[in-house]
Image (cartoon, rainbow, N blue to C red; front, top):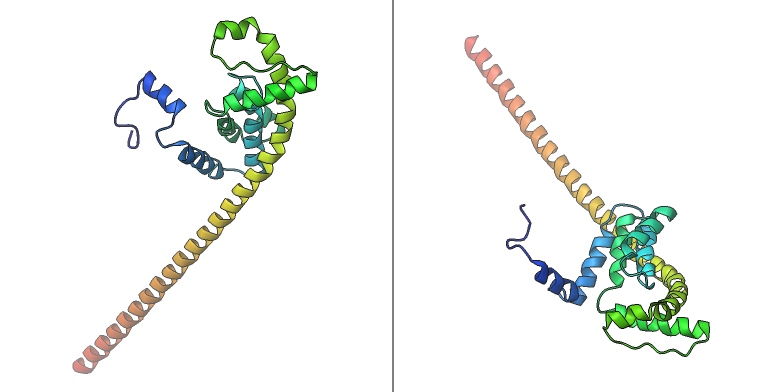
Length: 211
C-alpha cells in the first residue's frame, strides 16, 4: 500500500490508540469533522446519518451502536457512513459521563434515588444488570431524542458551509483553467497566423524570383 502504515500495529497498540489517540482528542474530533464534511451526499443525508450515530451514543446499547446507527440511518434515508462516524461521539472518555448522566436522568424519571456506583467490577455489574441498565435505557432514550436534532442541525450547517466553499473553490479553479486554456488557444492562433503569413511571404518571394 502506498499510504499504509510502515510498521504493523499490534493489539496493544490498537487498544492504546482507541483509549488515547496518538493525534490527541482535539485533532481526533477535527479528523471526524473532516471525514464527515467530505462524504458524498447532500447536507441533509450526511447530517441525518451523523445525528443517528450521535444520538445512539447516548443509549446504553454498548456494542450495538454501529449496527443500530447504520440501520436507523438506512430507514430515514441518511448516510450510513456518517452514522458510523457519528458514533464516535461516544468513546472511552465520554462514555463514563454519558452513562452517569443517563442513569441519573432515568432514575429521576422512574422516581428512584439510586446512585451510580462507578466501579469496573464486571461481576457486580452483571449481577445488578437490570438495576443499572433499565434506568440508563429510560434516561438514554429521551437524551437520544434531544441529541438528534442538535447533532443534525449543527452538522448540516457545517456540511452545507463546507460544500458551498468547496463549490466556490472548484468554480474558481475551473474559471482559471478556462481562462488559461483560452489564452493558450489565442497564443496558438497567433502563432498559426504568423506561420501562415510567413508561408505566404515565402511563396510570394519564390514566385517573384521565378518570374
